[in-house]
Image 1: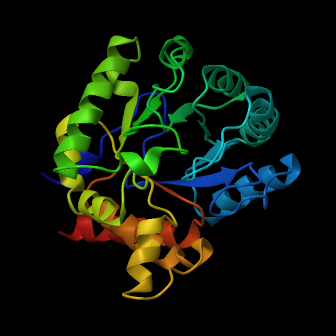
Image 2: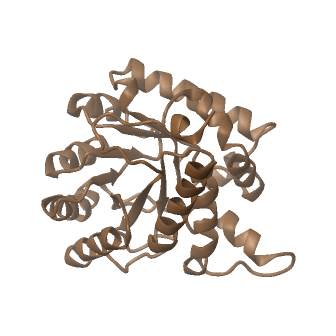
Length: 286
């Protein structure tokens, strides 16, 4: 099966002739990658516009860190961080996604112009999320998730990580569809780094093709994550800082695009934008 057929489309979003690039804007003081750099609304909007100029097809705005061990932010603060940035980017014509586990934040972000809800819990963290997204009619990312950041490392226990992630994603996807979200608006995400160690993440990247059996477009979010740090460090060395993992991120972006991913989510866009275009050119020449 060619990647052009496996990539799929998402109702309510633009169609791209290649793997799309989702740029990340973290409106947080404590993100593992770039916490505090874009915490101010004006700076965050400017960052989002810069990502678009670098080649991002859509921009994912989040106001709560989901790094391992992170504490949750309260809803009022998350709304304060996220909604003005979504509104500012949408007013500039940017295709905006909101990264949140809260139904109210999702609903208010959509009202402000977001056209996709990216929930790392797949609707499990907030029982009101699935009905809220169903009511808005926007697409929804269902990520593989086993619990909040404070405890997720202890849940990284698998016999066969690919089979178990596939099975758990299928169950969650079926649940959100039963909850009223149209199947053609569902995107799946294997949840790299969430309740997974480096070996688990690498196994999932190696078998992204298996996830196509779910029949929905695939989002891969590997950017700057711990498993890349472990790969780059080598035996007995300390992993490089998150911001020194962008070349490795672009490598995974190329691999994901070649495996038929619908989109990749990255902090720095330029190298990945180049990588997915090369992957598309190679696909077209095959």
